Length: 144
Image 1: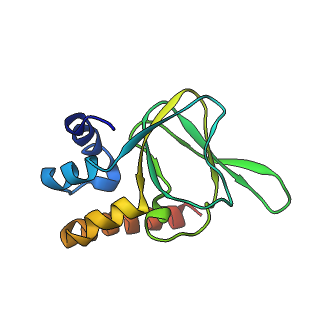
Image 2: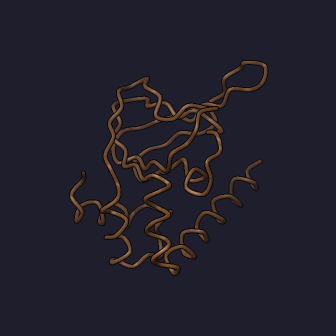
C-alpha cells in the first residue's frame, strides 16, 4: 500500500480529484493500491470486465481500440497524473479499450467497491468527482 501522505500530494495533481479537500484526498489515498507493469504489458484489456480506475504515477501507456474489422488504433497516450477506467467506478460494464504500458509503468488503482464505500460517507466528494467526470465526458464528445 502506498504512503498516504505522498499519495495525497500526488492525487492533488490528478484532474479527477481537483476540488477535493485534503481530508477527502486522505480518505481516498488510504484505499489505493500500487500496481506495476512492464513495457508492452496490458493494464486493462478491451472487452474484459473493469474493476476500477487507474492513475499513472510513473511511466507511460497508450490506449488501443480494436475495431470490429480487427484493426487496432492508438486513440490516446497517457503519462503521470492521467487516469483511465473511470467508467468502471460507476458500473460493471466491459472495458471500451485496452491500455498498454509503453515503458515500465506504475499505477495507483482504486476499485469500484472501495470508491463506493468512500462516496457513501461523503456526498460532497461524490458531487465534486461526478462533475469532473461529466467535464471529461463532454471534452471527449467534443473531440469526436
